[in-house]
Amino acid sequence: MNHAVSEIEEIQVAGDWAYLWTELSVTVVPKQGAAPIERQGNTLSILKKRNGKWLLFRDANLLAVKA
Image 1 (cartoon, rainbow, N blue to C red):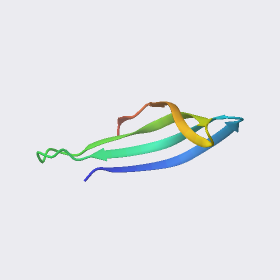
Image 2 (image 1 turned 45 degrees about the vertical axis):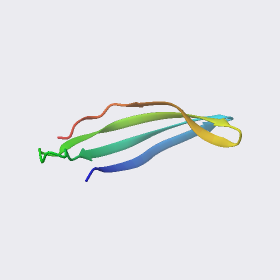
Image 3 (image 1 turned 90 degrees about the vertical axis):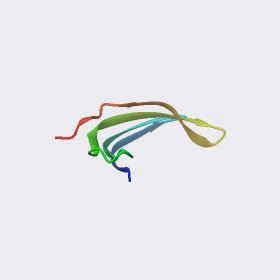
């Protein structure tokens, strides 16, 4: 079973634009029984409001091997 935990560190809104950065930790378990793959790091998401709904416009992450 795959697992992800995200904690929002900051949100800023300016009109129809917003950004947020988070700390993200992800564990992926391969189907063939190999060892789980763990990554963690920061993410930055940019959102744009369109027709009253927030949509993901850009997303970037800097996930590295979990220490």
